[in-house]
Amino acid sequence: MRRLPTRLPGPVLLEPDVKRDERGFFLETFRANVLSDLGIAETWVQDNHSRSLKGTLRGLHYQPGMAKLIRCARGSVVDVVVDLRTYSPHFGEWEMVELDDERHRQLYCPDGFAHGFCVTSELADVVYRCSSYYDPAIEDGVAYDDPQLAIPWPALELRVSPRDASAPRLSEVVAELPFGEPR
Image 1 (spheres, rainbow, N blue to C red):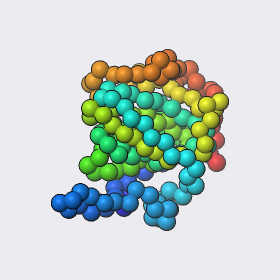
Image 2: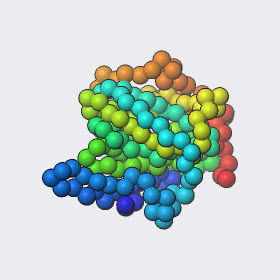
Image 3: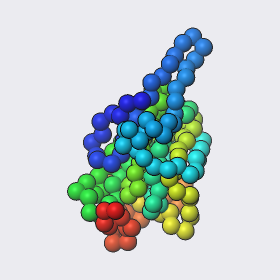
Image 4: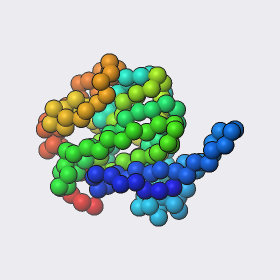
């Protein structure tokens, strides 16, 4: 597994070694010691799996204390992380990568970042590891279409949940963000 360059400090893009032959492929999707060597030393406590149709946009969600390790096991998505750490010189900036079932890349989304994705294939399965348990009482989100963020989502007919469609803009929640000081 290799660490690929990212524009923002914090997120980590991983590319696995894929062994392919006429029967298919094999790869390691998780190996704690390798991830630690690459700068990801989280303890993972929960795995999630979502299946979504083309144009489905999920996010931008965040939960204080939760990092995620995201991969697309079927299909393809554009995956986005947004820096919500108000002390960061990169506050409000985003990183976008394509995750798919061909290259098998994974994206590490650290605590202090919001996460979202948009499905670009007919169907996609996104699986991700979480460093803390999901807690609906503290999970929150920001608008995927916030003009301040200006994320260039794919030009598709987007399928967005009512919750995500009504998420507040970053400027409306900046004073309430729980990521105000480095840990």
